[in-house]
Length: 96
Image (cartoon, rainbow, N blue to C red; front, top):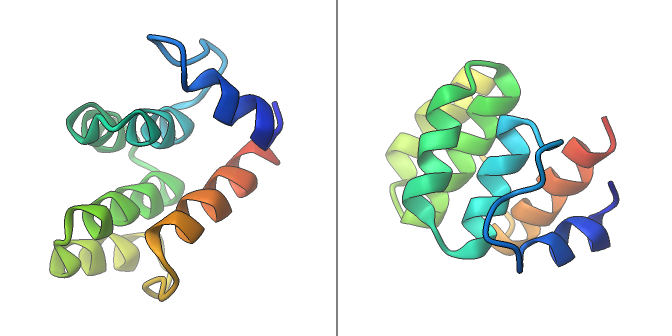
């Protein structure tokens, strides 16, 4: 799946079944359902999951918690906008 297809899928009521938990997290976030996105992020116990989890806490405005998750992911905190981070994560995860 490419980014335009991923973005277009957001009009559906459920994420495409082929998406892993990290992409489901971004999908639910794009739908405006932070709670559902966070539930997906909590289930993803990988460094990638931690990165997406950090992003969600940035969106929430909880930078301390975001910092914890960036650290767990082994990444420095992102300094761009959350929209830039969402797109960067989506492109990276879709390209795996």
